[in-house]
Image (cartoon, rainbow, N blue to C red; front, top):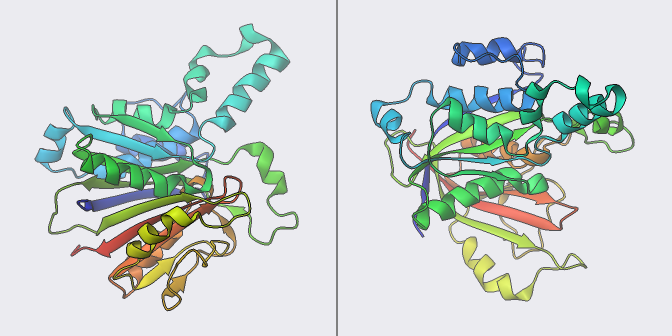
Length: 302
């Protein structure tokens, strides 16, 4: 398998740098002045700002390649659920004739990814993954496998998350962790190395545990090889470390106050990029699906 090279990163998060739901339209228009944000949902605005930030200073070659095999791959735990609930609630309370049809596109599960493709004229494959808390890692894994299979030459890959309003009242009840992380992060990736690459993805491994949360024996040999040369592990605190993971790794867990959802693994990725280690693994878990995903990384020269 050939590495997937990550060249640039763009991100935006609610509650950081003065970004709020109310300021999203103005931030969006800084990057897309010709597009009205009036009927665009917050999730799509977040995704557009992060993706536009990556390609805002695109090289001429990248702009040319947008017309061919430039893909968009988005991971999201909840996708458009927030917009769907809002749209349906209006229809139920006011009647179907009172609902604005301009709001309907916001309810489509792949609205954010599709709009990125339209806004930035990226005409390759457009894929949205909803894999719970592993969505970010699985999106990168999909890009890694897609470049090796010849499906993708160049892509924007990442995740976008807007927490449904009905979940927020439960965010501080009993669980010490659940401050939600809402936002978007996108990476410019390709199968070709560049001098300023941030890092490269060497391998990807996704595993679903058995009903008793044990590790399927058939994967042991494959998983043991996965750890060759690894110096560092970043993963959520609940990630099981008995899955053939070496015991001598430097282990950095995301901040305990953040429930990352579809952005799972994002904080570990940032920690890896600022850590002295040059080779590591970022992991994310989804308890409900008993699923864990891992990407093996090496730092670039950027």
